[in-house]
View 1: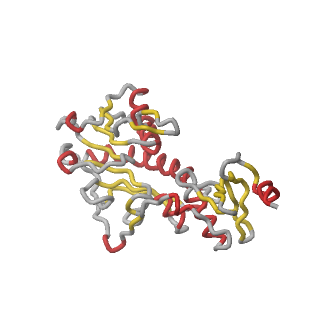
View 2: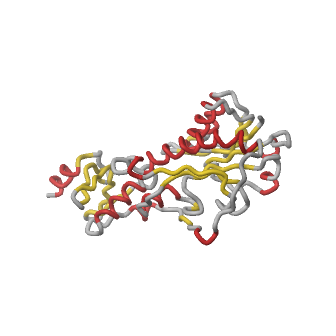
View 3: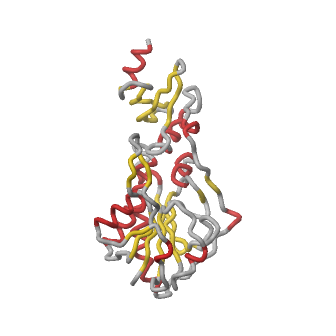
Length: 272
């Protein structure tokens, strides 16, 4: 079967790894253009492009290379809106891996938002891609309880990887059945749809006098993305790790602005 994979970041790569394990290799990978990254602002390829090169898969950022020869498009954390005229190319349409149980948590930050809301059911959805963001009919879903995902000791960075693996496995099960016409997509219930926003650095500010559990969820939610911090005497102190015990937030590791990472107790002694 000839299919094209649209993806960009590490989430995409994990999905590709699972597809490869199931003997599904894309005929082509479409990803974003090389971009300036890191402190040195070096021009670097996306993780998906590197994966394509390592696996000898043609890779491009050019839609004009897409033809009607492809049966299916797969989209996973591509990061760009795909025009309808492109989505209409393959006979079997386009399927997307989304890291939440749609219709809840559409939009830019489904993983962070599930943690912030202390969601009781976390999972992935395989859906058809339509013009409206994350609103396509549902093809399949997989659910997990947060406790089983270890969110007490890990955060969004870990959850993102777990859901990418789960999404890739589910996708590998779905693809042959979808192509064979054995699965029917079910429209989402728009009345139950919720939307997530794009978080900025300012959202990571922690009020140490605030609700301890909500602060803990915030630390876990922004792990691996914008991070969390508190202010001390006009100095930003980045929180690297924390625990929630006996209904109290216990910060364990911090990085005061301009200094190296240290234990929180060492930071407090330095303040005194």
